[in-house]
Length: 195
Length: 372
Ligand SMILES: [Zn+2]
Image 1: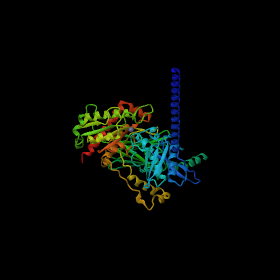
Image 2: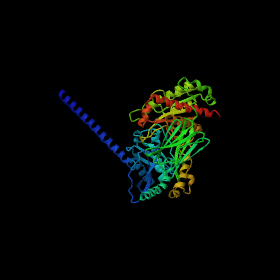
Image 3: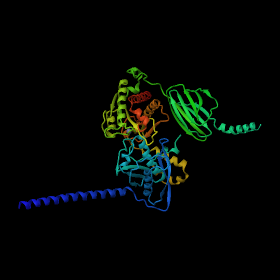
Image 4: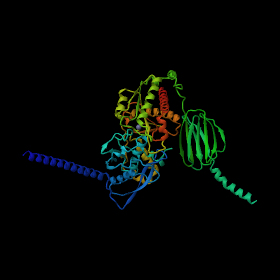
């Protein structure tokens, strides 16, 4: 009797162990699934149209603390949001000419919303500040590269607010106020320098 | 015979190009500054270096300036001369005063390099090292009405701020300069100085502003070190708050008006009023004018200290400044991302020089507000 009980206990223990392991494993795979879904939404599907348009995107340069234009072709999608997304993705991808990047290349574009009064909300992943060098100049240049690139190409966008991980954040790294929308500053563009 | 002709032909050929290489110089005293203009038929690249009482304009290429040396009659200029140095032409401006600041920019058609030179008043307290009570006798109403100055060392705790290439941290430099500045002010002025943090701890931007507002302080000075994607970025900058929207919209309209026929139709739709000006009602709004004056007096001293040129005061929407109800500036002392400046920033001597420069700027600001 005692022996039988012991065997029963041991087998019960083993079953419980296997169950726990199974639960942990299933949880893990579920987590992987979740994160996969998220990464998918990080890369917005851009509709590929036959017609294209040229846009001007701004990058910093070793030269001075101004922004320099680079031309890009984007798909002329009927949706303004889709066009704006392409501009931001090009900005993240970085410069092609002799210019410098302005956003960490690991930054992901989560979403863009545009309100009727012309405020565009650009939602970035946390890398935009975590991988950022900080400092006023770098913050100003990153922010206005985004703001100027959007407002310059899309007259419907009049101001731009930056969100991070879906939320309002005070600053990137302690300097420029992100809690209000930015109007463009075209005087930061090199060719448009005021004397 | 043939040789002579050949020489003549070469000579004739050279005349127009020689003329093209001659630069014209003009100057004029304005109430606030003295302007020197170098005019050229062709654009040139240049660097500007300053030492006390002297400006070197290094022009890349072979140019001439008519007369070798010229005495000038001006409030601040003494003489001009120029010399060749390899493939460069150096135009030298000698000034009557050692302490000055310079702004420069170029214009086209024809190409002009414009230098605006401003005299700096002599240091208020020349002998700071020796307890420096000398300045106080001159101190006037501006200072008498100033009771509390807040110094805000940027970042702290887990917020390290920017980081230099060899590992220097912004939060440590800002605290060192702030402490030095506090002790200089307290030794020389009858005012109270409060630091927003005195150790390596996290303090939110809102709390920094609250500390200043609760103390009913008269001045807020935030100290930072700059960072850039540009390796060569250098020099100091003093900022005051800009309101997010506002004049930039007007600039945008002016920009499109001047530059793009194509975009004009798109940007001026029938509902043009829809481009509204938004003015944020911030605590700082009513102090912007004083803040810009304070920024200017501090920046002038920092330019002089660092020998930096062309670094004016700047405006940007800084979170920490927006909630402060008093004249407020944010100083980016130097670029911690620049290896040379990182080295400077780590030295106690330089930190002290920076603190002294800021102190002189504060004094000059207080002197200028005395009249009102
Ligand atoms: Zn900082």
